[in-house]
Image (cartoon, rainbow, N blue to C red; front, side):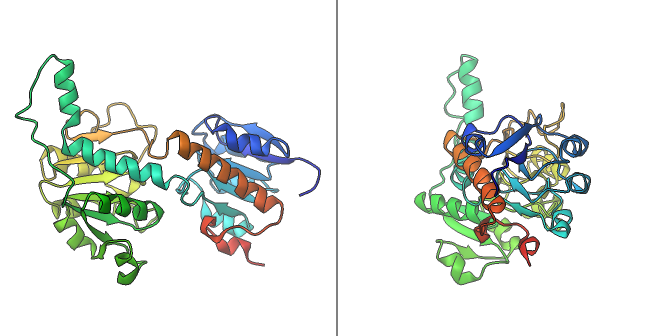
Length: 325
């Protein structure tokens, strides 16, 4: 990196200042508004060396409009809003922040299990209405229940550790791991059908890809226990929301904790809003004070590492092919 300042395009202003402050001494920063469309990115990208990307869509049109672009640094672990193939063809590396938000995401998954299993929504509404209703709020414990984790990556691994602390039995479906690796995390490797049939809680921790889109649909939901709860703090597209709505209203499953949706921000009148057996939140799993500092700093560090010509930690790299000589 020379003495000349680099040009960094920042996807929105909601980024924690820790990472922004790290870049300021060496970078000219251009800020977009959140959830920017590709044409907005493209219009601002002609001199861009790096994109600091939290929200919005970085597709092939953005890549084509940015001849100097060297890195798209994702703020978080998901990357379905970035055209990976287009970046790879241009030799543009795409990075994520590894496990910087794993603790916060896994904690929210546990929180949703407790919220739904102990009827906290209804208990709170009753109290607000002046009621003191105890006998009908018969909850269930996490203790010795079975948790099925689909995807034992960084977040799934952390969640398994939390579940072990509750003395839960942990089942894992992750074809990328062998049984011995899963056992090291206090869990048992099974296929998806077995996991769905045996779990009291099913928590999804997968990236969104063509292979994982709607991996949980009507057929999979029908295989779950009627008393089971589905948790999705990963990516909205991995669950068929129409099928989930049907399963919830027809009591095929007991409840769902949903932090992510197929379309974000969520359109008004979305059918999952208002159901009393759903805990929903606006994609806040990584939204803790501690996590935002870690993620912001790591996103900035990845940019600086690439533009200095230094070697990235392979755990942060989505498309290592882009780094090939």
